[in-house]
Image (cartoon, rainbow, N blue to C red; front, side, top):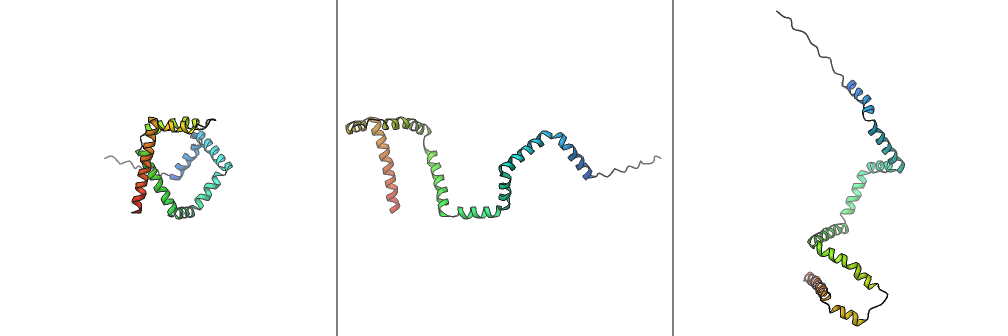
Length: 154
């Protein structure tokens, strides 16, 4: 009858394996390590590393002060107003805003002209179809604002 062959696996030394990988890493990743060293030196020269070290050391204090500032009524209102302003911008037609934004520079340049137009010239401009349309839009906006202000009183 055949005798079984005794096989004893060699114990692996995890530390030795890690040491071999560390020793070969600089050769395999030389370019990346050199770039990392350059980056670290630039961060050190600019003082960014000191700033980051201070921020990490004072992280609890920074968070506490930030929270204290954010729970005040003013920042809460500012955030709410920004959200509402974003909603307002989202409800507007982008093509209309583009047309208005391209028309404004020429209108402003006409207003900056050396010659001041006479009162009759200005009144004649109000008679044009485009001016009446803009005045109607402005009046509608003012009316809506007045209605909201009146509702707020009630």
